[in-house]
Image 1 (cartoon, rainbow, N blue to C red):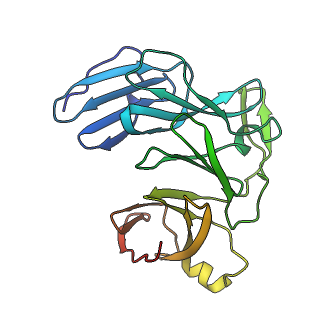
Image 2: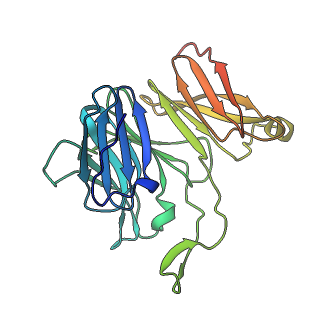
Length: 255
């Protein structure tokens, strides 16, 4: 496959997503999105108005991503389309000035039916929105951290904002499959023993339609280390450890 050259794209910094036969390449710094077809070698490019992060691609080439609201010092959820020349797009504020840049950070998911799910990283809140970023419902996870415990500081010599100290992460990793949300938390729950927690990573499962916690499963640690990331698809959970991929067959009934 040949990727054509588009002026202004930082090819050494692009992020790639593949959903065969479609391929998307993102340059958050240069604000470019490249999209193409692996089978036909056809490629196009679109430049967004702002630098972005956390970008996901939904049905009909809809783009959902985060941008920084400098006026309110928080993040915005954005909706745009790869093939639409119209620069107007939907916005949803992910926090308030009190939350700050890091307090509103989270992970974007898009379900098969086009619902957008936003899982906050530093607090126990999950948002569910439609494809136009209209809020459908929100709910809290079983974690008790309702306020992000994050403190930022400004480094004048480097003209950048960074964390003043390590934050308390509520939702370390999350994935969506069908109508279920899977969240891996690095925090010991009240109903878990310290021994179990040291041997395995708990993954809490939620019903997205009802906004309800169902139950938890446990991913065993390898050589004392937990998985770095995981996906759920077709009844399997595939977890990435340091240098190992492990596939687990799920048997989730009654949901």
